[in-house]
Length: 422
Image 1 (cartoon, rainbow, N blue to C red):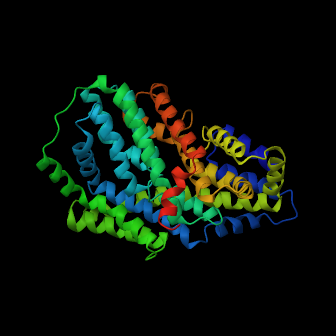
Image 2: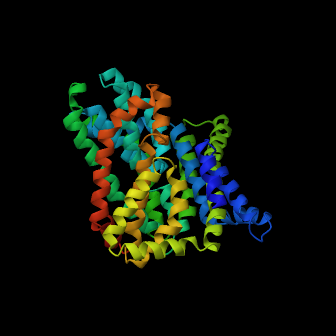
């Protein structure tokens, strides 16, 4: 109880999640017959994994792609595809996120990179600035679903019996469902903001495709090499970083050597935030396992909930509430060691459960009061969290509808992995 009390107190006063967890662990261990230095050992043991190296490498690949001018090429290509539809620029915003998802695997990177372009551009066309910011944040949830995906890699690291390729494939359909759902919403409810644009000619579309072939090929290259067994996810991340570096410096010639120190330092900073949380939670999970908390909770839940469907409803409610206050990856690291064994004991498909958990917690990135993507979007739009929150609520309902669909129709998640033999 001491550790839990310390954790709650530190979170209430606004302490960073990693430090709150570490201090809570230290506080609890100090009451046990252990040397407190054991906490440091568990922290470093939590990072002693070759697979974890994929995280900073994918972050670096995303930074290199962003700096090399790939974003504008993606937007031009998306505009060539859907820019002539009702709410054309809003549609471009959504489908640019689909394409960008195959590059960064991060909702925050998606919001930051695309928001700088779309928020001011949509405002010029007549869209409210707050709506542009909300749509950019809402569509960024697509990023972690379509491979490559940093949350998927982390999920596979801390769960048992789940392969990264299977999770990669399983996330494609929910990501596309979300894009289609958001597109339908803006088609009917945002078309009045801006007039229709003329459809681009076949020549202009072909030009947009030719200019975008480098970023379009990257996710095919990454995911294809993993699915065929040529490389591991970590090796694929290294190839992705190399691909982005070579494309930016020698093909597009938009990256200069003088840009690299700034790009690498920013990638290291962003990666360290994730890695510190992973290390802290590794120590907390060791303590929870030692205290038999997962087993106790599992027994309590199994005594009260006998149906897999009721359990999935309970999980969704818990994760939606937790996602209001905790960052998605941190929440997943804390809760997954407790929830996954229960799901497996109930016969729930591990791939299906993984995607439900990931999608659920990624929705938390765009829900007030602590949604990180809301803060990133507001840092660009500067309209206030309250204004963005009002605009994002209908979009949140679209995401909730997709969550309900993938929860209660498992085949929407599992058919693609099974089709390809996973």
